[in-house]
Amino acid sequence: MFELHPTLDADTVRIGELPLSLLLLSKDANYPWFILVPKRVGVKEIYELSANDRQELMHESHCLSKALVSLFSPHKLNIATIGNMVPQLHMHHICRFRNDICWPKPVWGQAHASAYPKAQAATVISNLRNQVALCGLVFI
Image 1 (cartoon, rainbow, N blue to C red):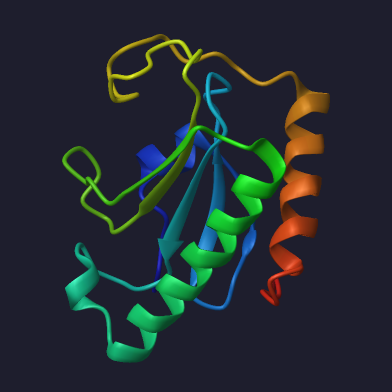
Image 2: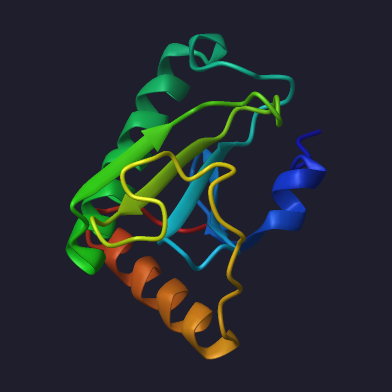
């Protein structure tokens, strides 16, 4: 049975469940930072997914990416499946700006996380859910 890794669970807010993945919002408000986690037990790398699951992950990433660019207009969208600290396959989507707190360095280990005010997090989540739906993704 699929379970979200405890670190991801502690560091994120659940936005919703897509056909393959959980969509999460990082609690670090320094950057618009979202994470897709395929709901597959024991999978650590993209190549371990079935062909259909790989295709669905790319579709979900595509829709999420389009939504983020539309909502936030980042200078760069960083997409990564690092997994050095959390072995469960998860795909980061981080909007980067030339004036963000650690530009142009990677976000990891550069700055202390800044919490979202509750109302701001709710707005970000609502706007993202609406934008992702425009791409044809349905939350289940």
